[in-house]
Amino acid sequence: MNPALETLLLPFSSEGGIPVPGRCLFLGAEAHPLLQGWQNLTAVQPHKPLADAWRRAGFTAPVERAEGRWPVVLLLPGKSRDEILASFALARDHLEPGGTLVAAVPNTLGASRFEKEFARATGSVHSIQKNKSRVFSATDDGTWNEALFAEWRTLGEPRPVPGTSHTTRAGIFSHGEIDAGSQFLVAHLPADLRGKVADLGAGWGYLSAEALRLAPGIQRIHLFESDSRALACARTNLAEWGDRPVFSWHDVTTGIPGHYDVILTNPPFHSGRDTDVDLGRAFVTSAARALGRTGRLYLVANRQLPYEAVLKAEGLGYERLAEDKTYKVILARKP
Image (cartoon, rainbow, N blue to C red):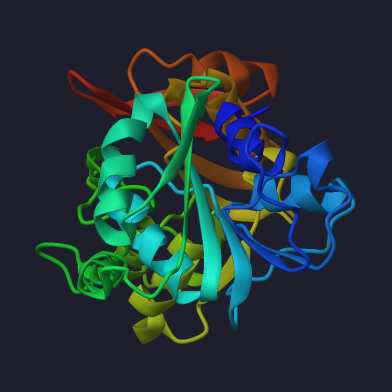
């Protein structure tokens, strides 16, 4: 279980002294048994695997965007500086006058630093350190620094990707720049891509946009992405292509529906800050099983990642189309 989640709930124990609220908003919601008895709990969780786990635990499905204000707002923020500060502002926007905001950050992400930032905006802060994380809370007494919250709010707004017409947001993968691996894959895609295409782990839409620009034979390109915020950016970034892009908030590791003439993917291999090669393997397995009989799979990966073994186990033939000191591009097909 996420240690920061365990720590987040400490203020509602005898150690913290805050009573369980009658109404609560949980931003970045993750399931925990202690929440089972809470009433009127509204969750926001943009990551599909965590949203699915929340539902499986028996809670009401997360909402995409919260509306209104709550007497208590719980927050498990993201991982980047701008995302965390912007989430403080978002939580503040959903807090009732006199309400309490409770946030938890792992030490590895700079919990002490973010507590100090939080204190700059709220003044008095109550803090507990445990599980290599820190939870800090403050109650709105009418004296909070609204100018600082306004400054943080701008950090969550759309931002341009240099050298492109695209936009991203803080916290999504490769926000504010084009991922180098995806660029390497695009540089080695042929112009004869056609038919029904899938982009697995589509992010803010770079691979799909470039494939559509390169290959007029693409009839539909299905973008599968687990982060709903990235998918929202992709919808904006691919708006010029009309109904040819199809957008799915989906956990690719569970498989993907249908079969495709072409599959493109730059598989993720990190969970948080930890390397998770099994995550990338699951992407490659899903891609292999969704490939049409005469389909082609194009994937890019760091050279040391062992995805060829997955392709072989799934019965695909493969070849390296290109490689440099960091990346490899693999073309795989069914025999």
